[in-house]
Image (cartoon, rainbow, N blue to C red; front, top):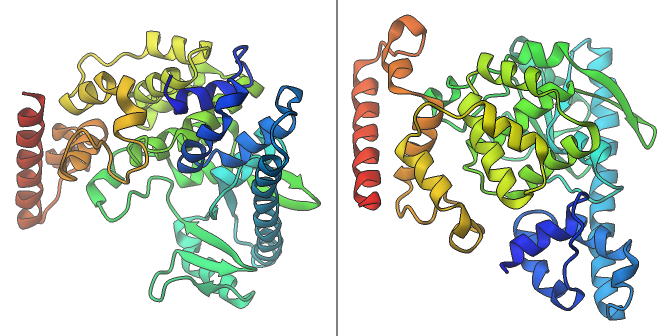
Length: 363
């Protein structure tokens, strides 16, 4: 069995089929690739079945937990610093993504975040960056107003949940309103540090949008949803309605299919797949689902959307077909069209090239 499947089976809280301890070391590389190394280390160190692991291996595992602990402590210090400053400046803020998920739905120090994702309203963005600079944050990259470093922690500040790099068309595709996310926030505390996080429904939408945006490249995002639903259930009706309203219904379906592939015991995903199948799958979507059995071997560990589609243009086509159907892009009455004719012509050409590549590969 492929090592990524063994890894998922091992860390799945609902699994009753533990991995063979003799194969544990083979799981380190895929766990690192998919950012699940702290969770793997926690599982092995806290399970009596693996007590006979070599001492040096146990020390290696413990080091991953300690590294995560050190990173979380730096992030907590940064959150405490900018949180107090934002409150004093009356700038509404909330954390989104991994930091909150890791603190509330994982065992202690079993989920690492490379940075802290911070959301503010668009009107407050410039003021928020000035507040960050006032408390000592430095821009991580000169000229980049989004990523800052504070207390040796990276802070990625957003004013929209749907940010998709610099491809503006895709960014308009799914419409998660930042104001709605901020309005849903609740107050939490971890290790004495107070912070805000969105409602569970908004977190679910963000995780789905994030997975789609990045071409489902990291199994940790599937595991985030799996832990959230295993620990706290899922209001499927509310999630489907919210996905329909935010244009994420196709993303929800594909995410559920992707998650079921690695965690096949999820009743939530079975129900989602049954209830929201698209009337038609686009070529890139079909290709993605057909290749899921070979997903770990042929794709994971690369930065492309799908390594079985040889050119980067196919990643664009995939995102385009799922997130931005042609009638939305070209119909100005929907708000998705563009007045800039040269831009529209170039974008149409990109789609033609992408479709040609997909047709050629599928043949």
